[in-house]
Image (cartoon, rainbow, N blue to C red; front, side, top):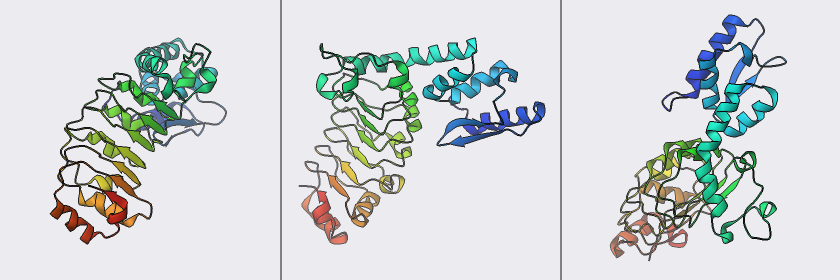
Length: 278
């Protein structure tokens, strides 16, 4: 599907098409932005025009396409899957060749200490992906196909931005962007509303954070901005940490002056134990 086309647009058009040409009740539903189909017995893929099928497949994750291929044989579907695998391959290759200490998939190791036998359908189902120290200068848009991810480590690379496709990682709870080249806060992160931990430490040129950081990421309990160039922290983040029983942030070695630190700890007393700033 084109990047500007939402799942709801495709869902509505597909529903109208099916109800026009198919008598049995059939509903297209959306769960966590993954396109799912509920129908009595089967979904009539064979009756859809090719352009509509391709748009629907474009809204589906690669893992969903793998499952669909088991039930529906179509050369155009096979072509779509091959295209998505090829697009994902650079990310997969980085993961395969990354330092051994980052590996989290013992079942795929062999004695030569390389990750082996992890097929694309296994890769897109990983819950934890570690790409630290892999010399990434940009994160491929294909990261959007890793929709089962809960933990994503991108530390010690050369990233200065993140692709919009990262918003498709609806299950993501931990995002580590430590030691990269971010000069500005990657605004797309604000759309990952279920994040519980976010680290931007050692992005030494980072000078500010979004004012609405704490309201846009209401489940944030751990935050790192150690050794950046911040002069202030968003009040929304301070308010969030103050309210949370177990919230903590490490923001040491920035450019906070002592009067600012006294001011915010007077306003939010619990930050004396929840916020490291000196």
